Image (cartoon, rainbow over all chains, first blue to last red; front, side, top):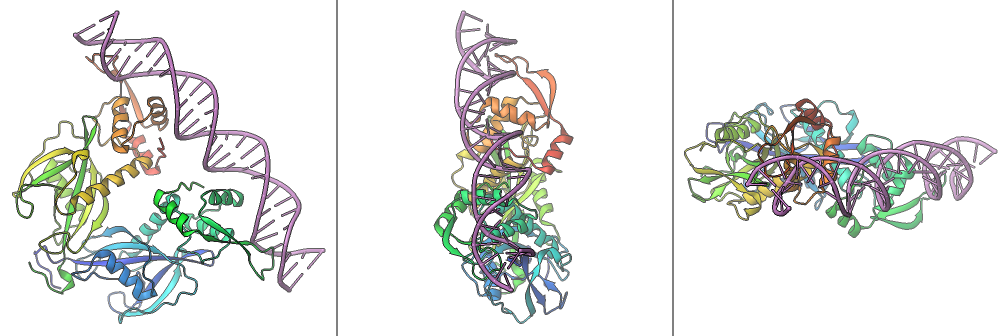
Length: 230
Length: 230
DNA sequence: GCAAAAGTGTTCTCGGTACACCCATGC
DNA sequence: GCATGGGTGTACCGAGAACACTTTTGC
């Protein structure tokens, strides 16, 4: 490996923790590696940062290559730089996390050295190569904190959704049960939802009302912050 | 500069935003640069990360070289990596912030290319070289958020202090006036203070009681988090 | 005695929490 | 008609916010 004492020779990469929501549970997008080390193991998607590429651009490039999504919210979480975190040389990595709506999303293998790509249930993941488990857990903690001060949901749910779906999402992120009446009171008081005056079809129980996020109010609430202590 | 398309050639540095408290105002530790670019201008202390040095070790090294302090709390805040942030080549920098007690602290010029070192009032700083102003402001925002969920004060105040001093500290960080009675009620309810049963001497007004942090309870409160909405 | 900062309680309001029953639909 | 999830209101409690006067010291 091309290392020396010259400071201008550390490698920089970006790793993405992309959360989705499906089946009432949180998922994360993993790729199956197509090269050593950890060939054929599932890991976080990442890539080296090009010398004349901004960090955030690199993170968006990875996400876009894998999912075709651009213009999505990405948040830098932390930089991991332990000397031995990458076995083949010094690689410092900047972790970003993102939230996207899984439904109807086509995934594509974005690079030659990727052998597979899939959504995995967060709670089933107990091992990942390198320090990726720590990275994922750090991003998960960030998401849990984020959900208390910013509205979350628009990014993870389909356009039209029921209040129960939104509640399940919050329960999945916070990892605890919420009271239905209190949740509804609270979420409606934020005034970021639009009542579509539509109901579910063909469900074998009383059909639920459908809601959508009011984009403008949602962004406003995001900008000024919310207090979601429930 | 030794750049090429080889990914293993980006430079990595660490910059520290070290906050102190004095004269009822927040200060930050700056160094006067002794080399181009921005020769003789005041900037954040920072240094290149050695190839076999962990990020946090590098941050501690900088702090220790300048202040002689080791074993201090440092928190990684964000990584700044715009392609053109450093005019002489690609340098990505990881920002850390720290809180230390100014009183009686001797500063030492820690490196040959540093021409001076001093505490500057945060509110007077409206320009810094590179993207250091943005870095400092990002760390300041982090501190403001931190103060709402973790006890702060032990690191910034002398061992013995009055409740008014502590209140001034919170007012400086949050940048707003607080109600004296509500502040005392709240801070005492956290049960992290020890009443020393001592009073100030030789002040030309009613002397205040002195308090100290109860280290154990302080660390406990830090670990479990607090809710300081005042 | 006066200037300066310390110290001290009560009331009101609002948001969080706990909690149980009837409703609409598909089969 | 029954299983399934949808939808609704009230009472209690505790924390935050507003607010003014007396006390102790040095000079």
